[in-house]
Amino acid sequence: MANFRITILPGDGIGPEIVAEGVKVLKAIEELYHHHFEIKEALIGGISLDQTGIPLPDETVASCQASDAVLLGAVGGPKWDQNPGHLRPEAGLLGIRKKLGLYANLRPATAFESLVDASTLKPEVISGVDLLVVRELTGGIYFGHKERREVNGVAEAVDTLHYNEKEIERIAHTAFRLARLRRNKVTSVDKANVMESSRLWREVVIRVAKEYPDVELEHVLVDACAMQLIRTPKHFDVIVTENLFGDILSDEAAMLTGSIGMLASASLGEGTFGLYEPVHGSAPDIAGQGIANPIATILSVAMMLKYSLGLKVEADLIELAVKSVLEKGYRTGDIASTGDEVKGTVEMGQLIIEEMKALKK
Image 1: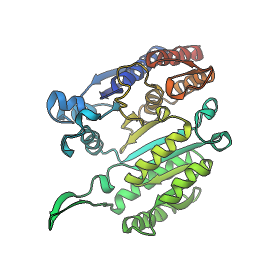
Image 2: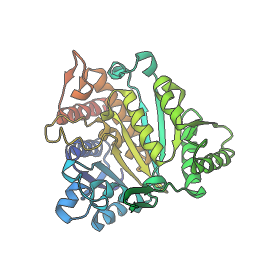
Image 3: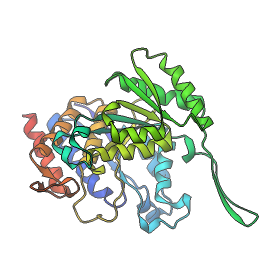
Image 4: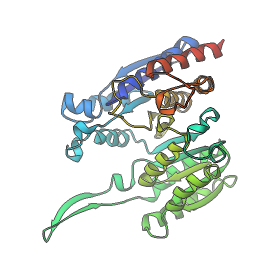
């Protein structure tokens, strides 16, 4: 029995709907294992802009800092698309990552055998895929110097990509440590044939790799990696890369499984603290319809239990329940095929909880 403090940030679009199912799963873990989760809700993103005028209130940051982990839904939507950069919902997401020191984003892409046919790729390409993208989260072009200007009547924009060796070292260590828990292989992705920042990246990763002689290291240019992810995704174990490349490649990897609605993620800093969120975004086009897929959020809860709270047995139960529900043919609309039994957000969440209770007996 243990006590934990969790901040939840439902956010925008389908965020509140899917986070609600994640919280129900936490409550089920409470019941089954006699833990206690003290849950506090806070504002971020568009809803925060509407209520406070800013995308990330100080109260939200303080609540997260006082917690053992954070569960985030999603931010953004067309309502705020015309806002200036510092008043867009996404500024809240970038801001919370920076303020909490969350420098490592983990995005697993695992093919459920029962969903192999949901992928647009051939079953023989997808079957057995199990990879992890480790994305550096607080450096690179997203956090470099940004400027809009006019030169001789012509508009220009500047975004500076910046990394130092310490930032690269810590994300490389994270990737190698995780590879040791998996299949002992790291693919470092860069653009070292063109970019000076990538040449530094490659040099530092090679240096760090010497501390992990049991882990295989390969270097792949980002364009080649994008191709290989579609052609031979089973080639990869752990992919480590910088912020922008990681953003793009992790979304590409997400689609290997058939739906971005299936992909969980973790953003980790020093120690055990982490922020957990589904990869799919706010999906404003289906918000409020009760049809969003909650599985990515529920799997994010499992990652939270595993990485931040030290509850591996409980995390394994959630993952096994999800797998079992899918094997029984239950689907949300985004992953449904002919003959599947289609369920809504709440129904799918309840099925997973019922399966958790059945498996625990």
